[in-house]
Image 1: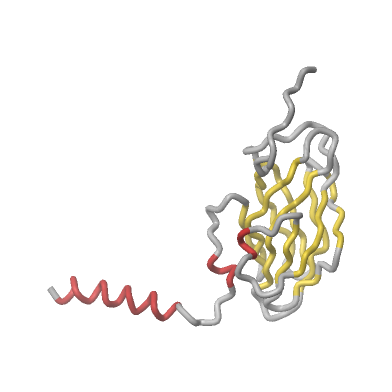
Image 2: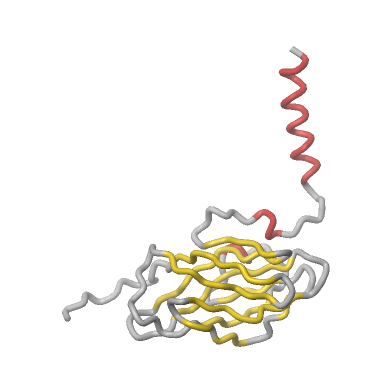
Length: 166
């Protein structure tokens, strides 16, 4: 009888101890969200998605990137076999506890972050059309943490595309 009572009490204490520990919001992001999530060193990339505005357009990269470490880092490059090297617009510095938000729409994962830095990331135009729901490899490289490759999904378009009559 004591064990049946002790286990739920112990579980409740462990959960309560985790609250207020100074954990960063990235530690609580849902890796099952709509985008890809990964970690390299102290850097977390979460809710990564590719935006596709149609044929013959560049791919945008939407993501939230958080430095959970105590030393600064920097996003140095983003690339994909599908769209080549990304053009980074803005300051990709990641101070300790700092965050970057990429893409035109603020990812849901960034909603609770205090003052993330907006950065634009645009890959080249893919040789073959990409399709919503499929994933494509994207490498995120950081000066200190290194490189993480994620299988990034293409986000559903905001508006339906015109039918291909070709």
